[in-house]
Length: 358
Ligand SMILES: *Cc1c(COP(=O)(O)O)cnc(C)c1O
Image (cartoon, rainbow, N blue to C red; front, side, top):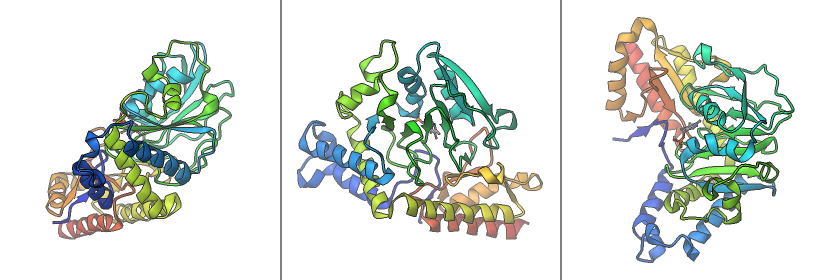
């Protein structure tokens, strides 16, 4: 049976990428060695990380004054590593609280400087993206989360801010084109839209760095990784390789514009069904709906059918649909690698289920 993977992360990767990665795991380029057995300072991995950096710059359209870094520790490490590198004690950073991940970032930043939460949708269970707020030009940066993986909201437009943007892009990184210029720093755990868990991409603008006074351990200082081209210590070789393969796939697929078109079309297909189907409803305001993580629940009159619907999904090869515990219901993650036909398969099951039960 064909399996359709709607998991929120670790998440679906392109089949061609997995196939190539499988070969490299056993015998890299006919060398009789696994890529996992090769030195990270050898010519093979040097070529891989250079290609990954070149593709990343090309795909996003990154200006020269941005660095691409491959780190570890997940996006969660960036919650403290970003303020540690960017914010002095006594200085202020502003944050928008749009969900669980944003609020964790806020909590960690407080250890390094003043944190001002300029807007929050917490008291409405994060069902919308706040838009009317002022960012002080004295703020060191404005921290935002481009896509809220758990609640299924997404910034359609990035806020205008006199301060540089620092953005957690984990769950919609490389799903659409964006102008990098307002961003001082971007971070994304690979396992949502780029590769396996184990590496985190950081894109940082040169002028953001070197302005804090505190002691910086080498492993937590972005400048260490800039200087050593992400090879200060042993990097996560295999996750970086697989991410590079995904970057090749993105380029071959037509780049971010083409992916944006496909992602939008997949998301609208599912949202249309959620809105049309009497059994289901969306959980967030329509204008802020995510094109990556689509949350929906059963209407109250049908709430008792939730378990049965999940079973029907699984029987049809639709997996990873359970909603996060803070929202309940269902969450279909429709990342870059998820084909339109997987969304169609889910829509068909929803229709069929409604016909039988409605
Ligand atoms: C998954 C996720 C995180 C946490 O990522 P880890 O790599 O597990 O630390 C942070 N932010 C967002 C938006 C996420 O989707």
